[in-house]
Amino acid sequence: MKASLEQLDNGLNQSLRFRHFSLPYFDAPYHFHPEYELTLIVKSEGKRYIGNHVADFSAGDLVLMGPNLPHCWKNETIGMEDSSQAVVVQFKADFLGEKFFSIPEMQAIGHLLEKSASGLVITGNTKKRIAKELIFLLNVPPVQKVLGLLDLLNTIAQAPQDYQLLENQNQAYQLAKVDLERINKVYAYVIENYTQEVHLETAAYLANMTETAFCRYFKKVTKKTFLDVVTEYRIKHACNLLIGTDKQVAEVCFESGFGNVSHFNKQFKTFTGQSPLGYRKLFQTM
Image (cartoon, rainbow, N blue to C red; front, side):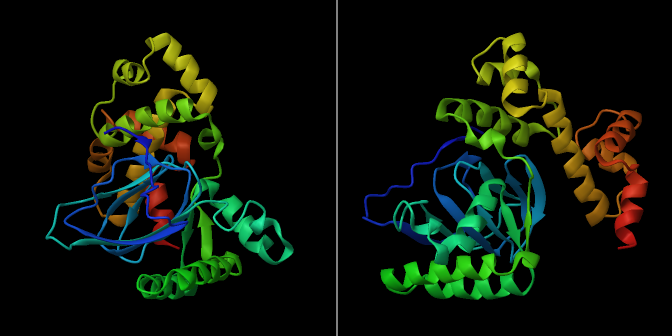
């Protein structure tokens, strides 16, 4: 799996795009693009990857993402022809003019778009309203689409209690294009393989570097070691299993890509401050 720049300019003279996908499974790879994106999952379930954040998704999942934030949705299984459905809106920051979101009347939306640099998951009553409006806007004239999008963004901006940042770090997505492509090839490799074996040699090859040079470069760009990133994905996967299933800790350990339970317990406590069982009990009492 290769993370690459997605070219969204389809030559149709559009400044924003509303699209409905109906597929056996979501086939877009881990990718990024300079446009903002609002994605509603109408039907499907699996794992959602946005930046270095991983979480389960299901029908109703709604996320707003900023420019160059790499992302993909991976299904648990391949279903029937229309078993994976999504509505996706993509638009550029200046699609209404370079300064449009800086004028006083638009500043709330402007602040929302700034926050979306790390990804925002939208919940509650706001999510329900946005979902209905998105589906309606698929089949309206272009001018109504523009006005509708502004209304959607304003609705989200006015309800901060109904959205959450997916990550509090976005420095990796403000890189030069060449660095972004190189780093995200590595992230794509980790996402595809973190529950199995992940090799430093392969990651360095994808970045077209020696292992030593790659380790220095990766740490400089992401502020984390390559091993830290792999472990982080595995821990997040384990957290989802601990919360969403009743699997034993040993099962969670091996399904998340760890080689032994002792090492898993140590790493889990380092990253979360809790033991695996303590983490599960914490969420059971909430």
